[in-house]
Image (tube, rainbow, N blue to C red; front, side):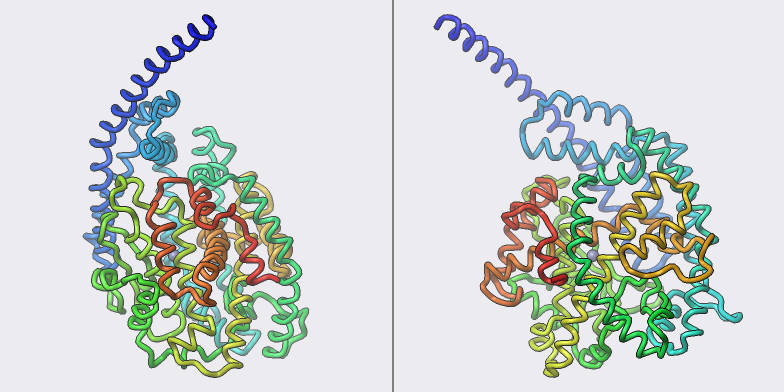
Length: 549
Ligand SMILES: [Zn+2]
């Protein structure tokens, strides 16, 4: 008994001492954050505002501001003394307050990627800038005529001459020979950075810094590839039959140039005609009506956004959170067509997520835990725009045969896209493991494995892999689109269960998303949050069930 008492007494004393220490450390870290976090939030807001100016006007002054403010923001994350302090706090295990501990975790991840030697980081960003200029200035040339990216797409969408399509596709791949050797140099520099920070290579580093477990990622992708292989093969038969009929060629003569996308990542036989239904529709009022059915209000986003085409403005679309409070904006170039219906619902989805955080949370936690969760919301909302129920209710489409075709195309779109992501992910994994291997062979062997697309004649020794923008300039990023699609399917299933309705635009769905997904911000890792939201671990099963049965 005595012994136990003494032991207990010792424990109590020890615990008391420990608690005192913990309180001090928590307080100390909190004090650090009170001083440090406002610096980051102010600088981030300046970067966001400057970027907004740049993207909405194309102004050179704004471009200067963006790059200098960005450098200043980066500097806040590469002070070695601060990093050491953060690591010491983490090693002490004394930060026991969960919100503080989560902020510590996030800060360490943000610092870590910036802790390589400055000269190396500079060399990398110079190489990236060079690549970026080469990408922007490259124009494919056929018979003396230059083709922009949009013009290449026009040819692939509309041209019926197989010869002309082939010529344009091949010309678009000439970019690879310009970029390939430069990308390999960049890959080696990125690997050098990763090794310096203690990782095997850059691929592994990027995953770890974004809280993705590599083994889990590869496992879920392998399983998905296996489980959807039957559905994909079946679909490819339909695609081949349709393409062979459309272009009057034998199936063995079909090459990537007969697809609508140069990388075979979009449904090549999507039905025509959606645009003619949408051309007289006010997309903004449809978006307002759609979201109001979920009790989600997009008025503030619309007021803050820049929505229509104008000279000097970025031609694409994005959503930007200016202050992690109420100022969330989208940039769009709305036209009354199917693509913009999808895009507006997509960007507003991102915006509503950003407006849904618990604003009592610290600034650092008012973000999504990973791109996957916000992308899932945006993809889920965008996806609705081609669903029969949506087209009937919001676009007054009554042609049942057309609606059926749209539904089939939606499934093809998912299957086709998933295969490209599988290819990209395995390619990047192998690229960073060994950048000196025959990368073009690797690229086409993966195209065969996943997309069932053969390497065309005379591609040996080329650099077709290097023409995909993301390989050079948005590395180790593509995987998150597919994880986003998987989560979108899981969410859709969940929302339909909760509301007992076959469509997600209802108040119960909106309330659920707000409370369960948006409100917690980044207080936990993405996979834990998804588990909390869905009530089961993250997987691709709902996606398989929906698109690959
Ligand atoms: Zn998005």
